Length: 409
Image 1: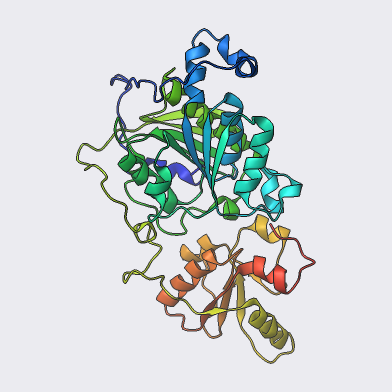
Image 2: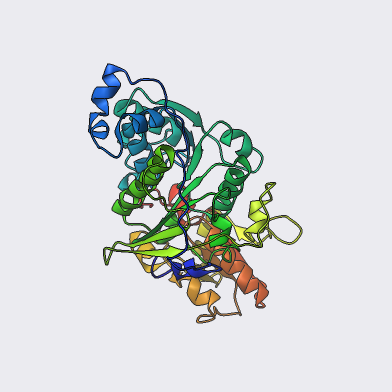
């Protein structure tokens, strides 16, 4: 994703010429009844747009939109859809608000830290527009609950940052027959599109296969420019409004790619695979994305706790033992906070074969929260290292338990 990481946007993508017919979509939602005096005043700047007007606003009032994630992308999407007058918004998010979220997740504030993102978002939306009905799903979206949660909604918006959830949202939306507005951000780059199996390509046509586990970092691992969330999120909200009201030309069949450093947009066309069969059931998305071993379980690795690592570091300082401690994060993360005595070796250098730790001593590996270190430990174990361990919880857990005076991100 992004210019430096997401040239993989071309994986399996079917490109076609601009001369092909554009799908003209009818309005997704029927108009509600007449607007009240308060509503007419609130939405007056919509009503005086000749191409929009009263009927489009009544369609928004009658719409039900489900947003997956109240984070960086979900924040502007929810705020702008509420302000625009979408009648009912559903929010799926099981996370809590942390201080590091506030750099980009503008729907939350300092007073919401420690509370659930879903409830925090509801509070903000009630201040923006108390006329909007908000339904909360403070739970993780899974193959077991997705179809039930999607029922009754006209479309779904996905602002999450992992591939397993994106495939799940795509498939559940396809089964329900509703469109899926997708956005993705990382560092300085973003992508937006609309998927709708009923009328055009889906997410699986863009990415027929999930990238190898750990090959694309999440925002928590790779970082993201906070304002990028607003730039991409506002485009996502715009697509929702166009789908509901039937105005304009949607991004169905097109992926909009944004580079915030160059301030440039480019468009990639994508079409439905003519050999693809309709989606009829949900699958195990962790297994599909390669997050599970062949037997369907998480492939185990040897681990140590941060408490055990602290003891080991003390013993090494006293000359009682010797081992390598590798920090497989990126230099920017290392500059924020580090464990003294750890050697910075970004994960890609190890997995790319550029660096090999000494094989005559145990190797302990840590990252931010444990996912990258597990990937490295698995790789080293496959290449003959017998005494290699992942530090559970990474530096987040280290700061929490061992050095709470240090910052965490």
